[in-house]
Length: 179
Length: 156
Image (cartoon, rainbow over all chains, first blue to last red; front, side, top):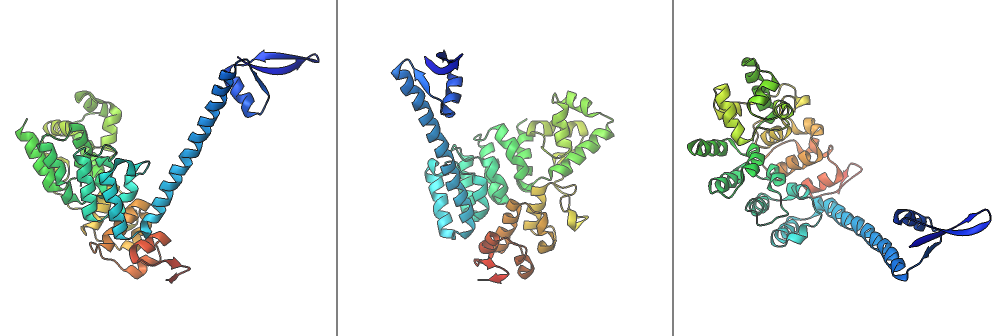
C-alpha cells in the first residue's frame, strides 16, 4: 500500500494513493510512505526501467541520424561494406530506414539488397520501400519470383507499378494464360 | 514504371463513358468508393486481379489501361508533376525520356528525388550543366556529386 501524508485541520493523516497518483506524487518529489518494502523496491525499479528506455531511444535515433548525415560523405567502398553487413546481419539495420540508404547505393548493391528482400531471406528488408531505387531492369526478378510461385499476390500488387513495360507484359501474359 | 495518375484519369474516362458513378463501379467490384477514388486520383493502383476485371468491363487490354505504349509530353516545365505521378516523372527524366533542363527544374524535387537525380548524374546516366546545378545544391549534395565541399560559394 502506498500512502501520502497530508494535513487536515492541523493534524497529520495518511491517505492511500492509487498507483497512478503515487507515480505523479513521486515525480513531484512528494514524500511517500510504503507499507511493504518489496512494493517500494518494485515501485522505484519501474522508474529506473523507464529512465533506461527513455535514454536508449534517443541514442539509437542519434546513431541513425549521424549515419544518414554521413552517407553523402562516405566513399563507395564504405557504403558497399555497409550493404554487405546489412545483407549478412539483420541487426545492422536496427532502427535504420533503408529508403534513406538506397539512393547512395550503386546499381549492383541496390540490386543485391533488393534480391535479398524479395526472396524473403531478410525479414527486416521491405522490397516495396526499396523498389523505387532499384533499376527497372533489375526488377525483372519480381516477375521471375511470381512466376516461380515465390511471391504473394499482395506483394506483387505493391510492386507491379515499378516494373518496366516488357516485364509488365510478361507478367500479364502469364496471368492471362493461367486464368 | 506505371504513371498512376494517368491510369487514374483513364479509369475515370472509361467509367464516365459507361455512364457509371463511382458508387456503381465500386459496387460492381465489391470495393469501397474511397478505394475507387484513390485509383482515379492516382494515389493507388488496382490490384492485379481487379485490373483484368476492369479490362473486361472497359473492353480494353492491360497495355492500354496502364498507358504502357504512350509517349509522355510535359506541358509546363515548371509544373513537372501536373497530371503525372512523381516517381514516374523522375524515372523518365533519369532514363532521358523527358528532356528538361535539370538545374532549372531541380527545385521541384523532394530531397530523395534530388538524390536519385544526382545519383544518375554521378553514374553518367544523365547529363546536365554541372556549373548551373552546383549552385543549387546543398552542402552534402555537393559533396556527394563532386566530392568537394562547398563553402560560401567557394569549392574546396
